Amino acid sequence: MNRFYIQIVLFILSIFVYANNEALATEPASGEDTKPKLISPYATPEEIYEQKKNLSCHCPNYTHEFEVMDEAIQQLEYHATSKDGYKLCIENSGDGISYYKKKYDDNTDILKINLNIYASHQYDGIVNRIWDPKSPNFFNKGHVK
Image 1 (cartoon, one colour):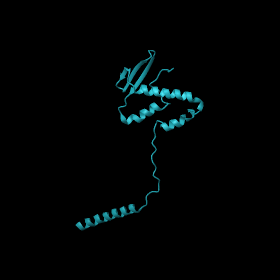
Image 2: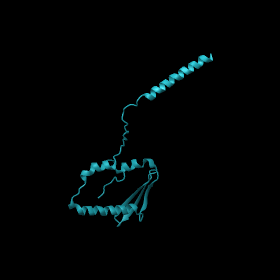
Image 3: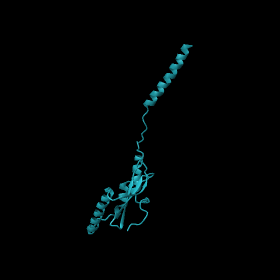
Image 4: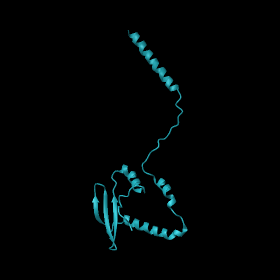
Protein backbone atom coordinates (compact mmCIF):
# COMPACT_ATOMS: atom_id res chain seq x y z
CA MET A 1 0.00 0.00 0.00
CA ASN A 2 2.83 2.39 0.77
CA ARG A 3 4.35 1.69 -2.62
CA PHE A 4 1.09 2.66 -4.32
CA TYR A 5 0.92 6.01 -2.45
CA ILE A 6 4.56 6.75 -3.26
CA GLN A 7 3.87 6.16 -6.96
CA ILE A 8 0.88 8.53 -6.88
CA VAL A 9 2.87 11.23 -5.10
CA LEU A 10 5.75 10.89 -7.57
CA PHE A 11 3.32 11.01 -10.50
CA ILE A 12 1.67 14.21 -9.21
CA LEU A 13 5.09 15.71 -8.47
CA SER A 14 6.26 14.96 -12.02
CA ILE A 15 3.13 16.68 -13.40
CA PHE A 16 3.91 19.81 -11.35
CA VAL A 17 7.55 19.80 -12.49
CA TYR A 18 6.48 19.42 -16.13
CA ALA A 19 3.95 22.28 -15.82
CA ASN A 20 6.53 24.47 -14.12
CA ASN A 21 9.06 23.85 -16.92
CA GLU A 22 6.42 24.68 -19.54
CA ALA A 23 5.54 27.92 -17.77
CA LEU A 24 9.18 28.99 -17.52
CA ALA A 25 9.92 28.05 -21.13
CA THR A 26 7.20 30.26 -22.63
CA GLU A 27 8.13 33.74 -23.81
CA PRO A 28 6.62 36.76 -22.09
CA ALA A 29 3.85 38.68 -23.81
CA SER A 30 5.14 41.22 -26.30
CA GLY A 31 3.16 44.16 -24.93
CA GLU A 32 4.68 47.52 -24.07
CA ASP A 33 4.77 48.68 -20.50
CA THR A 34 2.57 51.74 -20.31
CA LYS A 35 2.67 54.24 -17.52
CA PRO A 36 -0.74 55.06 -16.11
CA LYS A 37 -1.81 58.63 -16.76
CA LEU A 38 -2.63 60.56 -13.63
CA ILE A 39 -5.87 62.44 -14.01
CA SER A 40 -5.97 65.62 -11.98
CA PRO A 41 -9.05 67.84 -11.78
CA TYR A 42 -6.82 70.91 -11.46
CA ALA A 43 -4.75 72.48 -14.17
CA THR A 44 -1.01 72.72 -13.63
CA PRO A 45 0.64 76.16 -13.59
CA GLU A 46 2.14 75.36 -17.00
CA GLU A 47 -1.32 74.64 -18.45
CA ILE A 48 -2.72 77.85 -16.97
CA TYR A 49 0.21 79.78 -18.43
CA GLU A 50 -0.45 78.29 -21.87
CA GLN A 51 -4.15 79.20 -21.60
CA LYS A 52 -3.40 82.80 -20.63
CA LYS A 53 -0.24 83.33 -22.72
CA ASN A 54 -2.13 85.34 -25.35
CA LEU A 55 -3.22 87.85 -22.67
CA SER A 56 0.33 88.91 -21.83
CA CYS A 57 1.74 91.87 -23.72
CA HIS A 58 5.40 92.53 -24.34
CA CYS A 59 5.18 95.94 -26.00
CA PRO A 60 7.85 98.52 -25.15
CA ASN A 61 5.12 101.21 -24.97
CA TYR A 62 3.85 99.79 -21.69
CA THR A 63 6.94 100.38 -19.54
CA HIS A 64 5.05 102.75 -17.22
CA GLU A 65 2.40 100.08 -16.60
CA PHE A 66 5.12 97.54 -15.84
CA GLU A 67 6.70 99.91 -13.32
CA VAL A 68 3.33 100.42 -11.62
CA MET A 69 2.83 96.65 -11.42
CA ASP A 70 6.33 96.19 -9.97
CA GLU A 71 5.48 98.75 -7.29
CA ALA A 72 2.18 96.97 -6.61
CA ILE A 73 4.03 93.67 -6.21
CA GLN A 74 6.42 95.26 -3.72
CA GLN A 75 3.48 96.64 -1.73
CA LEU A 76 1.78 93.24 -1.82
CA GLU A 77 4.93 91.52 -0.53
CA TYR A 78 5.23 94.12 2.24
CA HIS A 79 1.64 93.73 3.40
CA ALA A 80 1.76 89.93 3.12
CA THR A 81 4.80 89.65 5.39
CA SER A 82 4.21 92.62 7.72
CA LYS A 83 2.44 92.23 11.06
CA ASP A 84 2.52 95.92 12.00
CA GLY A 85 -0.81 97.56 12.67
CA TYR A 86 -3.01 94.57 11.80
CA LYS A 87 -5.80 93.75 14.24
CA LEU A 88 -7.58 90.43 14.38
CA CYS A 89 -10.98 90.88 12.79
CA ILE A 90 -12.39 87.34 12.50
CA GLU A 91 -10.81 84.06 13.52
CA ASN A 92 -12.45 80.92 12.23
CA SER A 93 -10.49 78.07 13.78
CA GLY A 94 -12.65 75.42 12.08
CA ASP A 95 -11.50 76.45 8.60
CA GLY A 96 -8.04 77.64 9.63
CA ILE A 97 -8.72 81.11 8.20
CA SER A 98 -7.96 84.29 10.13
CA TYR A 99 -8.88 87.76 8.88
CA TYR A 100 -6.83 90.80 9.88
CA LYS A 101 -7.70 94.43 9.19
CA LYS A 102 -5.54 97.53 9.06
CA LYS A 103 -6.53 101.17 8.56
CA TYR A 104 -4.34 102.99 6.04
CA ASP A 105 -4.56 106.80 5.88
CA ASP A 106 -7.85 106.66 7.85
CA ASN A 107 -9.87 105.93 4.70
CA THR A 108 -8.52 102.66 3.33
CA ASP A 109 -9.03 99.27 4.95
CA ILE A 110 -6.46 96.62 4.14
CA LEU A 111 -7.76 93.11 4.71
CA LYS A 112 -5.22 90.33 5.25
CA ILE A 113 -6.25 86.68 5.15
CA ASN A 114 -4.14 84.01 6.83
CA LEU A 115 -5.02 80.51 5.61
CA ASN A 116 -3.56 77.61 7.60
CA ILE A 117 -3.51 74.25 5.86
CA TYR A 118 -3.24 71.49 8.43
CA ALA A 119 -3.71 68.48 6.14
CA SER A 120 -0.42 68.43 4.26
CA HIS A 121 -1.66 65.77 1.82
CA GLN A 122 -4.32 68.23 0.59
CA TYR A 123 -1.91 71.15 0.15
CA ASP A 124 -1.41 70.79 -3.62
CA GLY A 125 -5.13 70.50 -4.29
CA ILE A 126 -5.92 73.60 -2.23
CA VAL A 127 -3.17 75.66 -3.89
CA ASN A 128 -4.34 74.55 -7.35
CA ARG A 129 -7.94 75.46 -6.50
CA ILE A 130 -6.93 78.94 -5.32
CA TRP A 131 -4.52 79.43 -8.23
CA ASP A 132 -6.99 78.39 -10.96
CA PRO A 133 -8.61 81.52 -12.46
CA LYS A 134 -11.70 79.51 -13.47
CA SER A 135 -12.49 78.52 -9.88
CA PRO A 136 -14.82 80.73 -7.83
CA ASN A 137 -13.05 83.33 -5.70
CA PHE A 138 -14.32 82.75 -2.17
CA PHE A 139 -11.94 85.30 -0.59
CA ASN A 140 -13.18 88.40 -2.42
CA LYS A 141 -16.92 88.52 -2.90
CA GLY A 142 -17.07 92.30 -3.30
CA HIS A 143 -15.74 94.74 -5.85
CA VAL A 144 -12.33 96.39 -5.85
CA LYS A 145 -11.88 99.94 -7.15
